[in-house]
Length: 455
Image (tube, rainbow, N blue to C red):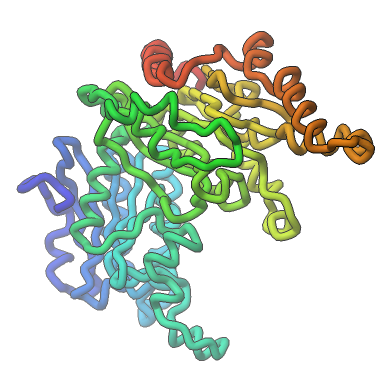
């Protein structure tokens, strides 16, 4: 289900037969004709627990992936380190972790959690790029229900501690949650289809598909003029990206931010977009970490980053400050500033304050940036700016509402108009919604002619 039929070649056939210390099936095969390494725990042998021989089998697969530049998929079904192997089991786990880290800078790594992934075994997926979990079957945790109960008195199920939905929605440890092993392996195949085999490798460009015609025709009328009215950013993506080839990652975690793999003119791209339909598209600590991680991944493997901006700012309040929103917001700044793959940014409605910068602004090094004609770019929105700058005048006015509206209109015209940014060269151009796809496609064609142009 993961590999093309009949292509698997096993590296450890003797050790997967159930001998002492075994418990791993490792080898390589093809996914859509491209080589991929696989390391799968064999739960039939000691519940897939990690001993020194199992660890060596996984590490052998990791070394092959690193040396040959092949992506690696880990299929995890393990109760953790083998207790009776003591320090030797821990030593083996450490070796796997070290190679996980080495592989990060060389090849894509995907973990598929089809059973328990407990204790030390849980760290390896956390060191890979993407983790896919099977609902009601895959569980990831450092300490299981029995130990939690003994240590703290908390009576929690495996699902509550480490289930697929918990990790996909709350912790962010899982990037996709699916209903079956078949779906999980298919998701891994789809993910690989967007990625190069290794860092610096050729992108998996496919025949271009036109965008969804109905969605494209709806673009000029999609975004409400009033910034407080929400819309679904997915519909905008429908009208810009190639039709039918898209994979959203972390869809249920940090929902005010979208992170999507898609295609423009057949070329794989990573899409970062505010989602007005979720909390108005506001940035917070969780969505900032989500976006930063995604941008860093795309940059590492040469995927252009396409950013759609409709952001009111960062979420204010004591809760966010205590969560470290400053530090997490800075991760977005760092990810965009360090990006070595092409970065294209378009402001589709509002872009206020530091959140505008964090969403891939030209000042962070975006290769190209545009704004829709109806958009606003400013330190803050008209309502907040007028309330702050004209507080006394509003208090003294006979008709505060009329004055507020007039001052807000003046602010939009004199401060927030996108043409001001274009005249200053801060955005490259002001474009119409229906020009977005063609503008991005032509720019991307030009930028991708220069391999490694920024790094």
